[in-house]
Length: 448
Ligand SMILES: *Cc1c(COP(=O)(O)O)cnc(C)c1O
Image (cartoon, rainbow, N blue to C red; front, side, top):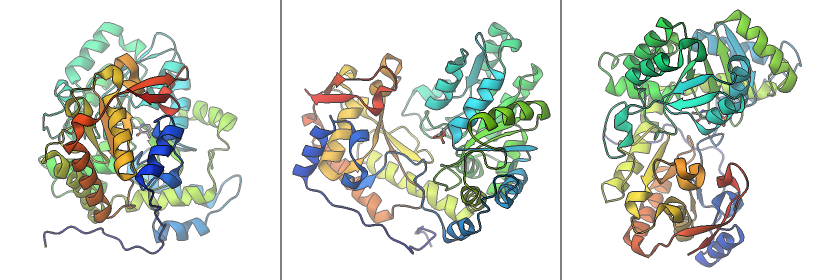
């Protein structure tokens, strides 16, 4: 059979609320044309993020009932720890309330002023936590990633030659770690090849620098390796993931992505001395090392989710369904970041709306129009988010895991194609008020 179906059936449903165009126009005005400021009940299809928005399985809900809420030595912790050790091989498994808490602890221990931390592309919280210590966060994506239209298998790769040059220029002593984000979220959800992980590890360890994976979407990355990298077609996703982790000295992880959990994170390492410093900091702000800011039931959900996400039927469906949205809009003339990534489709709004200059935020204008037209929430990743540093004006449509069916996605496709028909009538926006940092969350706009 060619048709790929959702590999689950629905046991519990959550109604969606329809709104009229007039209501949405009013909600937009009240929210200052910022979709973060619209209450979720007024959204029909929410593609703001894939983070913490997954539907949990019956097995996850059942495991939550088993959650051991003991302050110290919870059974749920040991279950989660053994799943993570089996998957990653890491000796120390430190739970945190989400990914950024793992980042904050890791960088507080390793980084100071004058240090430099390279990555394929830093995620925004990763960059912010590195810079908060006084260190510098440097992106070293493969040069082809700059062209949104290039269709490469592993556009998330790091430029290894650029890493060599950076180490030569800065000195290995000033680079406390090298990171690789799998898949590359800020770079379009593009995967990193096993060959690239191995090459980055080899370069880093030649200089005595540890390699950390920002492993939020490790399972989606493993599936792309299976599909696209010679030699891995017969491997299971778990074997590929284990091999990916075998090159790393540690990882940070947000369980809100590829663990199907609604909250949670992990910090892992092989290093005994580091683990002591990290758990000392953990106790200060997150909690005792066997719960780290989470309830026992959250640890159970993570343990079950980490095994479910490596199911081939799930991963096949996940990557095909994201690609389905991407191909159906791109093949009808909507420019996207090619090829479709794992967790999201990114529309190149700069190309789609060339009549709107970047100072008038084309991707934000497109986000507003898509909500006005069809009640769909997406997120701007461009000049609103990054100011003058923005490389592209992108609109991200992130797909929550196991939440929407194909007919929901068909509705999204139809809405985007209708908006595309009338794209020349879309007007830009001007900022009316903005906070001093992370302005995309709360800035207010007016229509030009
Ligand atoms: C989501 C994410 C993080 C941060 O995780 P939170 O759980 O949101 O704090 C870090 N890196 C990447 C690549 C992410 O996608």
